[in-house]
Length: 207
Image (cartoon, helix red, strand yellow):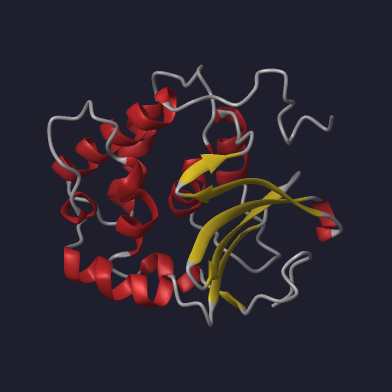
């Protein structure tokens, strides 16, 4: 697998990992707490347990295999999520893929802290809900939505966001109570974390 800018990385398709127990704990659990939720986040919120999360982390963060999650969109830019497993310095990169795959650009990253402009709620939903049926990658809209969720950078999240998030978590196996707790923690973290410079343009603005 080749992506511009990752010539030295051992990239491998990672889409199948999103269906394995322990994946969502690794991808989202760290964002479920911002000190405002009454309970400590646990993998059980996602229908998983600590053993699931630990076992999958060995695959997800393997320096010799960097999982790539492709989210091509039917109309407009799609996205790619890359687990950049540099030995001793891993992170997650979020890339924007322009129509035709002619241009790829990094729009955000997680190296402990999140950096980059991210996406508005409307932009995130557009990519999540419009999978390309002609290109390889994730087509399930709930999985696409949750993979992109760390990109959310929007103070104007609609009131329907919580219900959408709970439904997506339930679709990937979270029990009802866990989905509610995880959704509460995730939204609290995302809407209260430090914002990017308001003068920056959205990566989808074309500016």
